[in-house]
Length: 410
Image 1 (tube, rainbow, N blue to C red):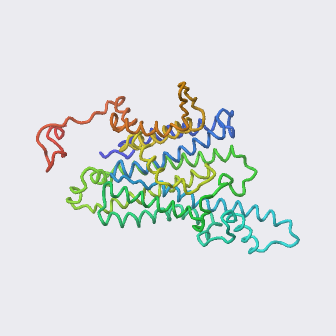
Image 2: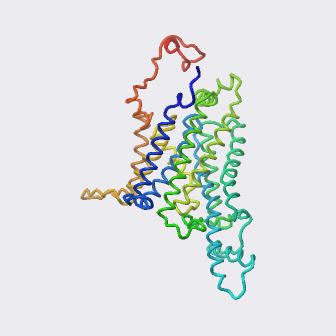
Image 3: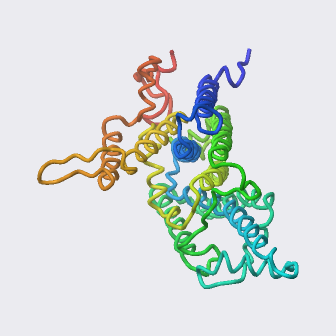
């Protein structure tokens, strides 16, 4: 009798249950719906952390399961933020312009409103006209579609060009990093149409909801982030839990053998790369309205490197490990860089964690890589008595990494 998906993957139900409980507790203790123990700023931090956990799942899927060390997935994260940010900023500015022109003797025309919006948004970079890329900025539905399609198309085109050339390993990582750097440098230009270094700001203000307090809006985004994270975890678990996931793991472990067995390796890689880019974009679309601002610095290659560090610390090849790593590093980073961690005076020098946090993060990555390659998620093996099979006997395949006799008997 074939077991159901949830019977074969009990961690999915456990994760969704814990996520639901966490969301409920934060809601109850928030300023919006509860006793006010948790501040609005902390609710936003927790909501942003859930978004980072979602992109960590995407990174784990492409790296931990498929073996593609992408150093460019934060580019898709940022693009998702830009797509939704364009609508938020346009509609918010439109409301301000219409309100200011309402006092004029004559009703404003559509062209006057549009000129006013262009001046308000692009005056900071010396412009007044709305660029063509903002054509759909007044449509929420269109921008939501672009959240998925723009990063998805970029990943599809980039992946097709890279994988068909059979670029692998460190060379592929360098290419993804170059893509991210090129995108960031383009967005830094004032004529990119996205306000250059200034980026998009005021994203925390939802159009038409001026009377709704930020405490309530932060809870709404927390719910949306939790739902997206739960759905993303479910999709990722479904992808890696079947035959497709077995082939993907085979590509990670021995790409040449999988190709020899007749599988079109490039197609599998392209599907995973594009799917994870879309997941990353959705995470970014939920993250930046909570952050309130997005600029090209958010897409810099170093952000994608941090993402790889999070997954490595949590334990790559384990979906819950990626979530644990992202949540742990994000919250600890907030504590250290937010001035909450006390400085340590040494007499001759004072350790200020704002300056030393990145050094501590780098050392943690090195120590985890050397001493605990399974990451924090590997600790669960101690509680569940999960053991690796004893390897011994003759190889049952063409090389030393294949199944061996003692494993086959178990």
